Length: 422
Ligand SMILES: Cc1cc2nc3c(=O)[nH]c(=O)nc-3n(C[C@H](O)[C@H](O)[C@H](O)COP(=O)(O)O)c2cc1C
Image (cartoon, rainbow, N blue to C red):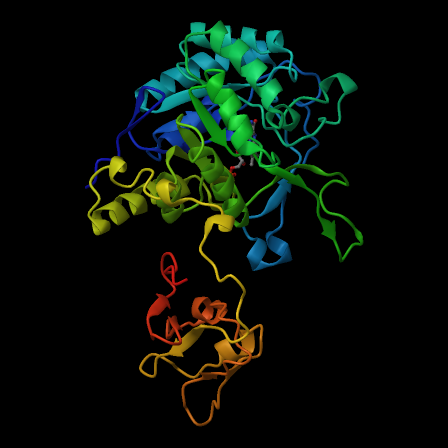
């Protein structure tokens, strides 16, 4: 068995898989449910003293599963910050939660939100939590609910704070200076200049960055001709399809700063992917809702097995593996002018091809031809082919690879990175 132990912000964690801020970290009973699945850490539900975000319109979870299997993990939600009063959480729920986490050897990370850029509205939470024994705190700076439908004074709460490097710097610096526990800054995927915000919060002394919070969105029920759930644009447009975007944002951060990043995942292979992108911890949130708490132990077990299968012995063997290769497309070697006749063409394997014709159907350029009855392999008409590689990714038999037309050299077999051929 691989050694899954790791450290994050100087704290030991028994494995990198945990639960990011949501209901599961808000109540001791739910923390225990997750802890029993063997997770390394859990983040508390965001506590606050803002009038508005503690009142959620019930029901507040609207799964999109009924609109198609491709949306099975997607949903919109109108739930906001912790629903119970702060004092009640601090006096009753937090001590019990800390005790349970201690018993289960699960790191508890606190989460709070002040009011936008006003540093003094954050610091009391940090001090309270530090006194209670919380040894790492996340600033919920990336919340997707733009104004919480509350008053104008709260318009900068959540995502707006994580979009401006100067404000992010000021709030983070004030928080870092107020307490001795490591401070995590939470990003919003809405941020365009994520590398800039990451640099600002690193300079301000943040110990880590959490990436990412949810998007916001809305949905229309076409059958009823009305909105689905509530008629508003609200936080929590979430689901596995957003991973590509989130991972790209994480790469922007890990390629820019040295402090560790905490990223969000759904499956064991997502765990591997995010660790390779240099995440220090990997969190599950919407996955736990849409697949149930057992997804946590399943992911830990499957990740452990995968590590063994690959011969990796510890987290350090894969952590940050791809970061040095991250680049922007502008830096990738390309033809000076794209020649009309593509130098890169598909090669079809007569042993593997099952004559299904998917390549012919999906070729965007109408360049692949197949006589299905003759059971011959497809042919690509070079005059039409763009050398795009779409057929490689769609072939169910892995019977296609891209080669250089002049040298026959393999350029891409559908795994890993394409060969530089220019
Ligand atoms: C129901 C629900 C409640 C959430 N509540 C909070 C919260 O109170 N504070 C916070 O910082 N993030 C909150 N989040 C955001 C998650 O922590 C996480 O950043 C986001 O869902 C993206 O990760 P995922 O793809 O693993 O779901 C919530 C997400 C969900 C689905």
